[in-house]
Length: 305
Ligand SMILES: Cc1cc2nc3c(=O)[nH]c(=O)nc-3n(C[C@H](O)[C@H](O)[C@H](O)COP(=O)(O)OP(=O)(O)OC[C@H]3O[C@@H](n4cnc5c(N)ncnc54)[C@H](O)[C@@H]3O)c2cc1C
Image 1: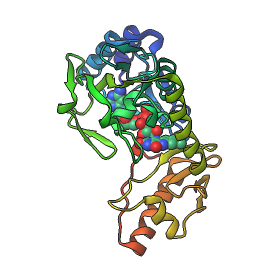
Image 2: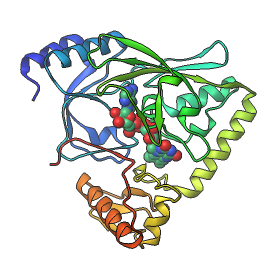
Image 3: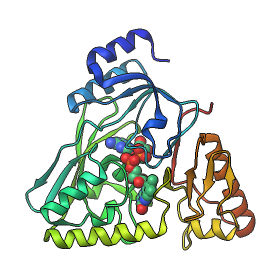
Image 4: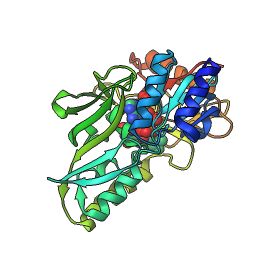
């Protein structure tokens, strides 16, 4: 529990940038999740530094949530302060074919910007919903490209808010669907992407081609969190789940998508426990039939109800 005196300090520091007891089901693409004890939206890096320093000083847990497109928040909610960077959305073209984006910039903002400026290189990410911070933290990608291919540098604030470091790509340890090596509690503030000057029509064509491919293969009209499991080496989680006969399996309000077996959809009133039960059912059956333990790609956070 955040002590009352610390709540007051947080309110004095952030004004309307902090609220208490906020349902996170409104902040995740699955539309699932208990309350954030506090949800902070710092308006810039000074606010962020103050927020992190208050949390560190009073030992209040803090964690960043991007746009919640790859996160399952458990029904008991999240203790301490959950931070979103949705007020940190500056996006600009930089010299030598660079684009600098603050971590709260959304995928659609990047796509619109690159398309209208004729900047090529990030088309692959146009259909990967989320924030730039979430893209980086997840090393988001498609089979052909990942974030690691386009990042030149990131700017990171230390967990206490005291230091900001610029880390060049050589110092970033990207692995499949993760960025390793940052101290726990660090906050990615911004990213410098390397792009190539092109023409707007060609960039638009590339984006549209990839979005069309996605629309054909993914259930985009129901709340989901994208791929639930990582692909095991040399195979696809979706293929294994489908081969195990689990497409369409429902528990409570959650369903293994009949369109793409690696997606779990909230088809109405699902709670986190429904999704967890489907995850367990898929892992167990796939292991029994194929000897493979699937590892979750979705980040599962918070307390059980
Ligand atoms: C329909 C659909 C399709 C999808 N397709 C793809 C796909 O093709 N490829 C793919 O890779 N993913 C895909 N995803 C998953 C998701 O879009 C990506 O993982 C995306 O990067 C999530 O971004 P987010 O901001 O929503 O992150 P969140 O889910 O909010 O957070 C993910 C992680 O990032 C961390 N994080 C976020 N911002 C910061 C920051 N500023 N500093 C430090 N840590 C931070 C969080 O703490 C968390 O651990 C899909 C999801 C959906 C719903």
